[in-house]
Length: 363
Ligand SMILES: Nc1ncnc2c1ncn2[C@@H]1O[C@H](COP(=O)(O)OP(=O)(O)OP(=O)(O)O)[C@@H](O)[C@H]1O
Image 1 (cartoon, rainbow, N blue to C red):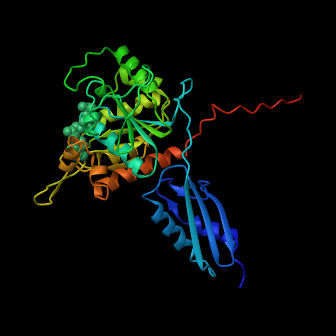
Image 2 (cartoon, rainbow, N blue to C red; image 1 turned 45 degrees about the horizontal axis):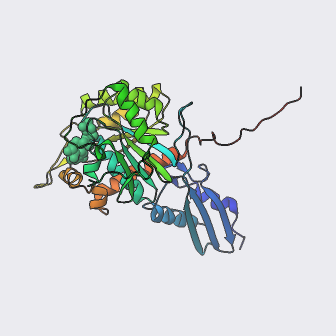
């Protein structure tokens, strides 16, 4: 029998399109080695995003594609994850201890941006990443409540703050420093200054991703933040309602203006399933987020149902991803988390810390 070749293995690997990279693993340069020893094949996969909840599926996919080759006895797949730093806006200083910042934004208030942000961050933790969340929703900081955290952040040197850690998630919020009920009367420049300080004076420890829960809207404050914070990408949360979609489009334009790539759109509260009779109803209309992403050429990342559990879990200080880690809703958030970071992994890397190549040409 003729020996199995590297080209044959590569050709069958290419038949599988990775849902998170949206291309095959050879084109995505995610296969770092293929070893062939008689009928035993070993494939080394290196992914630039966390993938704990996907590794079994990926392994099975590769095993079954490679097993179609004549003469294959065993297929071993080893998956490694390595998150690197991606490029941010030009002229913005990167953040110590943080590889990538992902901003979660909404054009309009009350669409579930903060709830999505915390579940998204916890989904990334579940996928195996080191994650932090900064509650930049300075007018209505809700992350402390949703994380069930009441303590004040510690300061070891009287100048910087230690993040508050819950469910392995590092967090910082103005809500830890002032009571939730006390009204915040901040003017625009004060908001951006306070937030930049909160961001830079927190001792984030070795984060793959820092999630920023931005204040709702697309005004001056949001624009300044999008300009000043070193962001690798943004995610926009919307409900399927026309009015929310109009505002979400404004959010897209805002990030375009400051050269921050939009990694996709999440549709929240897209369908309501009656907890008594199971009847499904599109309270805010149907398919709006998906239509908008097609129209604006941005990825549709997924949709969350309007489900009383999501609200109750957040109110109880234990967001659904940790309250019901194996439930259907947690799986949706984890799928969205892999989509966002998979997409980010294909973006330009940050070479700002490397010494540039200088070529001297003799003319
Ligand atoms: N998918 C969902 N199903 C049920 N309730 C939800 C869902 N998403 C969010 N909620 C609830 O809706 C309310 C508003 O959500 P949230 O505070 O996350 O919105 P927001 O867009 O961040 O609001 P704001 O503009 O005030 O910052 C909260 O009570 C939250 O628990």
